[in-house]
Length: 220
Image (cartoon, rainbow, N blue to C red; front, side, top):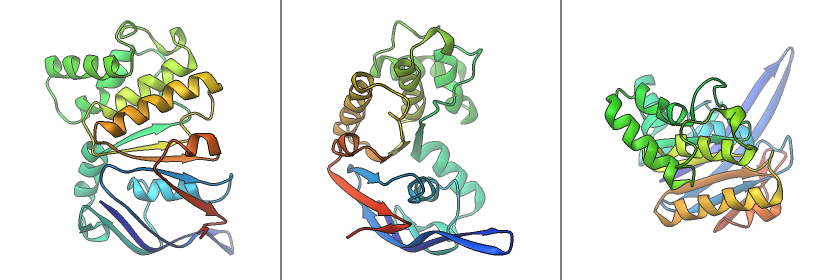
């Protein structure tokens, strides 16, 4: 499903050039649960942004579903981001005055889904993450773990092939982290490809495959 070949990412900082990713090559099969593990500054979030088409590499080749991403138009890349990939972030990225149901429905609204279907699909997504009794609650009425589950429901509501999660348990205690990771495990068993970014070994161990990143390189 995903193949990266010799991916390099370089940023220009004033007069200096800073290389974040150094010749990254990897392959992720459809239905795999993969963890990308590394300490802060290892380049793992930059790698996730490239995989999620939120950033472009400085050089190298990215093949997504047998298509070279470099050859795709901007609207084609946007369609992949909107329909094929679901994103979960450490900070939840919820809007403070909006109910859980409306938060989850946002991607469907952007994709032009009519309102009755939006409500139905969003309700089902919230039920899947165990929040069927919290659909009208706003973020300040939810615990951190519940807010993260809302963001997970929002990520899966479009029925994406891939879920990209960047430090999804970073702000959670160990018990709540387990609840969240159990949901990722369940989604993987339903056929979703999960790519998880983490610096925690116990979280990375939920995956079938662990990729270790250090100073922008994959450790062999």
